[in-house]
Image 1 (cartoon, rainbow over the protein chains, first blue to last red):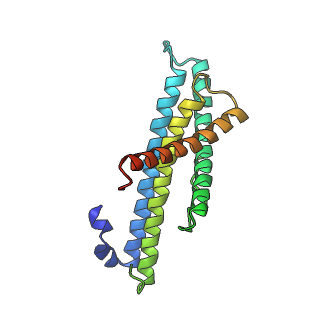
Image 2 (cartoon, rainbow over the protein chains, first blue to last red):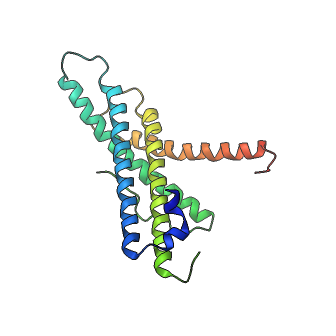
Image 3 (cartoon, chains in turn brown, red):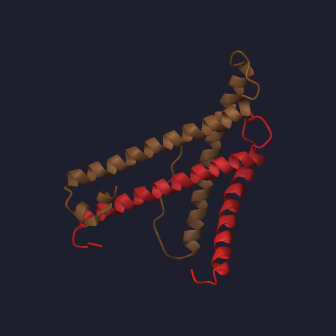
Length: 108
Length: 83
């Protein structure tokens, strides 16, 4: 990581290598985000839905899990939108730092 | 940085944008976890997200940021403004 972020090293990369670095960064980020989401969802939803484990997964528990996952995804996307709006407002009021991130990421 | 090489500048800019996007996503991750606990605290997950819960989540996100800003401000005051 330190080597990659050294500007002198970065300067020596060919355009193809630069593209490889960017796509590697994107892939790693996507993987880490998916793993985070799965870990989070399973923790939150099993906490809520599996409170008195029986001998098999009951249909009520399945329904609960399904709803829980759907609501969690919706919440994720809503948090993403809300945070993005807030950051844009803060950037606008503080004047500097144009740019921002276009459309925030969302899971579907 | 190095204005002489537009290719390099573009590359560095892309790297920076990816880093920012990742920071943003991690913040969404943290906030979703906290606000989920706050806004879906006692019920089993409902079949639809109602307006009240939506408002709760939006308020939760904004108040968490307010709280964080407030605490940072307070801490820097405690420090005699030397930060």
